[in-house]
Amino acid sequence: MTDVTQMIKQDLTGNPAPLGLMGFGMTTVLLNFHNAGFYALSAMILAMGFFYGGLAQIIAGLMEWKKGNTFATTAFISYGSFWLSLVFLWVMPKMGWAETPEASAMVAYLIMWGIFSAILFIATLKLSRALQVVFLSLTVLFFLLALGDYTHNPAIKIIAGYEGIFCGFSAIYTALAQVLNEVYGKTVAPIGLVKK
Image (cartoon, rainbow, N blue to C red; front, side, top):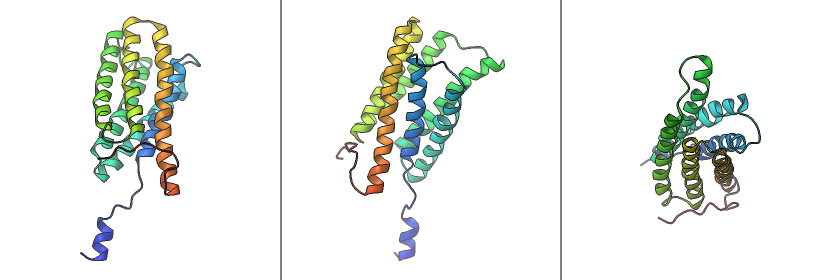
C-alpha cells in the first residue's frame, strides 16, 4: 500500500462527540433550570433546543456516521430529534398547527425516551464511566418527568429538574474532558474508559 493510499484511508477528521455532548448537555441544563423553578419556559430554551440541542446534535451524529460509530450516530441523531420534537410540541399548539398533547400522550412520549435511554445506557457499559453517568442519569430523568406528568405532582417535576441539571452537567464534563485530553495529549480530566 502506498503512502498516498494510507493517507486517504486514515481518518483525519476531528472528534464530533464533544459537539454532540455539549449540545445535549447545555440545553438539558437550561431546560432543567426551568423545571427546577428558576425561570419560566421562554424563547431562550426554545432557541437552544432547536439549534444546539437539535441541529448541532444531528450534525454531530452525521459526523459520527462518517466515522462508523453506530452508538454515537444513533444517540446524537435521536436526541437531536428529541429536542426538535420537544420544541415543536411546545410551538405547534401556540401556532394553531396542532392540539396540545394530553398528559397521557406526554407520559407515553417520555417513557419511550426513557426506555431508549436505558438501552443506550447498557451499551455504555462497554464505553466509559463518564458516559455511564450521562445515560443512567438521563434514563432516570425521563422516567421522573413521565411520573411528574402522570401524577401532576409539581414536586416531582422540581426533583426531575435538579436531576436533569446533574445529567446535563455530566454531559458537559464528558465533552470538555474529551476536548482537554485531546488538546493536551494526556488525561487532564478522566472519563474512565472501559477496557475492552
